[in-house]
Length: 118
Image (tube, rainbow, N blue to C red; front, side, top):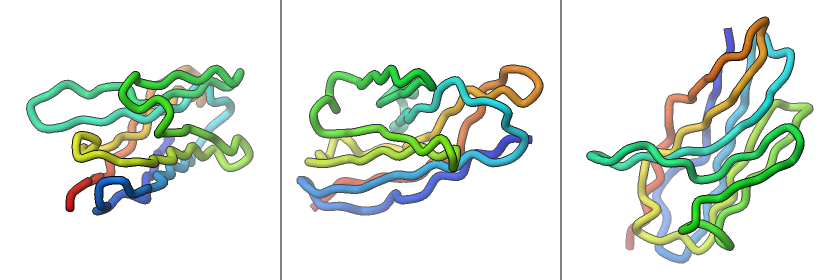
């Protein structure tokens, strides 16, 4: 069974920075992609950033130039460096991974709260 464990959320002032981490563990033969999503109450979960195993990266328009996704394949870990944070970045951030553990499955982390407030 695959588990995704996130860390790094918290309270930060506007303009500040945070780095989120997500480590995948369990029966993992291959990871095709990892990503970060976020969700605020009353809204749908939205993609923030994604990275495929081939190195293709995508960002949601509002975070381009401020957020950076990276990964350590040896550790099955993905990071999200968030700079110049704004109040509208406040959300629960979820890690996502597409994993081959005998078959291709999608997995989600439990979520980590990011609160941007003065």
